[in-house]
Structures are given as C-alpha cells and as structure tokens.
Length: 295
Image (cartoon, rainbow, N blue to C red; front, side):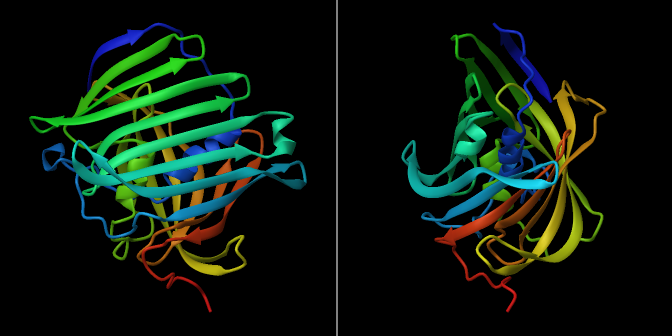
C-alpha cells in the first residue's frame, strides 16, 4: 500500500459513537471478497441484486437489562449513468429514534456509485452525529495495474483531511464492497476460513477480515425464519506503506441469507459498554426468491 500527497488541516478527532458502529458494520456484513489484482480493474459480474431493491432494518441497544429500539436503517439501490456508462447507485439512510435523539441525534446518508461490473467509482458519506458533522468523499481510478483512491474528509468548520492511496489489490468503500461481495459463491467456504480485504474510510485505507462460522436458522423482524451463513467481522487496523497495525478486534457477528441474494438478516455487535443488534424488517425488490426461508 502506497500513500502520497497527504494534507492535514485539522487534528484527528476521536468520538465514541455506537450507532455509527452499527451502521458501519451493517455495510460490510456480507463482504467475502478476497482482494483481487487491480489489473483486473476490480470488476465482477453482478449475480445478486437489481435496481429497485430496498432493505430496512430495526436497530436495538441493550441498556442494562432492557432492549431499546435505537432507530432504523434503509438501504436502496437504483440504476444510474457514470460517464456515459450504465451502473448502480446505492444509498444507506440511518436515522436514530426520538428516544435516542434525546441523548444522541444521528442522521447519516451514505451514497456509493459503481459500474454494472461492480467497479467502485465514487463514495460519499454525510454524517450528523450528535454535535459533530462531517462529509467523507472518495474517488476511485485505475492505472498501470494499481487501484487508486483519493479521499477527503470535510468538517463542519470547513477544515479538511485529504489523502491519496494506491494498491496492487482492489480498494473498496463500504457500500461498493457490500455490492461486489454479494456476488461471491460461499458454497465452498469451510468453517474457520478467513478472508481479507482493503477498505477506504474517508481518511485512510484499512485492512479488515471475515471469519466464516458456519450456518444457523435466524428469525428476523418480519416474523420469518431464514437459513443463514454466519460470519464474524474483525478489524485489524491501518495499512500504511505496506505495514499494518497489530490490533485485532472482533466487531460484529452477522447472519446473511443462504441463497443467491445474500441479504443480511441479523447482526450482533460487541460494544465497549454493552451490546446491540440489528434485525431485518422488510425486503422489497430482491432479485431472486428467498429460498433460505425456513418453512
């Protein structure tokens, strides 16, 4: 991993935001992509979704012995055109509930633009979280066998952080990663198998991995039970000039439909102060029948 042209106009700010962690984890819940050579332009045939798909989730937090509804998240996909080429635009909108707004107000909108071949082109995240507001943007390009990402984070006061990173393997944003990974074939995965990938966060590129843990039947908030693939998401740290920080942290265990859609059904989060869960509430516009539905 190479980095150049780093501009820092404001010190990095650390914030504790459990709702943001929920949404962040939701975006990567079915990532099974092994980083592929950038010379292949990071493309893949779309086998999982169509324009018009919409998935809604209920978010819950555990407060001592009580589970409270914390908000909702809705992810929609529509067709778009990128420099004259057909593609997809995916948007994730997350809204905290009125009860949670009293303590911490959140309004996050994430947008990802990809080609029909699932190649990342543009990413934007506008985040209102408590008193903090920031906008992350990422532009993806490909040259001489490298995947290149230019990132910018702009703060409420107008200050910003800008970086440019390149890698011989693919780099994704959260939503484009999800879109591509849904077309991977999980049928030959073995319990204990681990998969690594690179992700742009708005300020830097980090390495993540997934640990496959088998299958389980899970009941969703739509009242149905689904046969699911089970994964644990592990955060490894920042990748800088070929090096990676030695920090491994289990973030979430998630359950995705064991069918051609690979739709996230439930997520269990490991927070510093407790636990949280997200349950699928509704699905419309899915490309294939939900054959993972348990009769």
